[in-house]
Length: 169
Image (cartoon, rainbow, N blue to C red; front, side):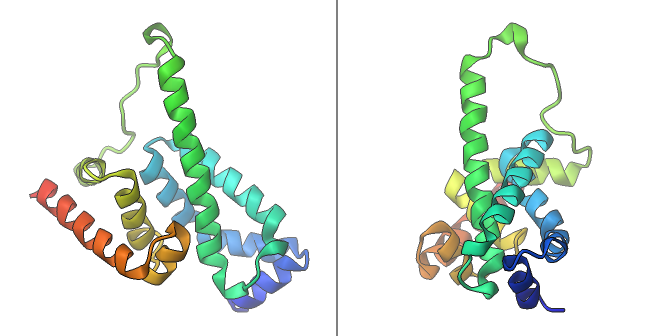
């Protein structure tokens, strides 16, 4: 069964079809959220919020073929909300209440380097890179998610990757 048929079935209330769709996207969704939020728990929460929202709102999806861009748009909004919450917590927590944990749970040098390179990017740039690399979206699909033009996405992606490359060299 193809994705378009699964989306159509999910729109008509088929829970198993929605679960199959989730199974197809869960790793990409989590990877995107993890690299955007830099925290395992926040990433899991953002994906959970995204999936719940998608499940509740799938009937409103107009075009079945737009499912992947639609669910990543929902996740992008969930991540933005999580970032606002991270900032709020950071601004309101005192140092005495802070947990002493390493920044990253990743032990590999490559992942630390990737995180360092991603951190030189602005939030918009990081979002575009993650949608392209982790999400596998084309520039016109990223444009729909981000509200930019496809040309603007290609330009930002090119500049962002060049920034990352210079950081890694």
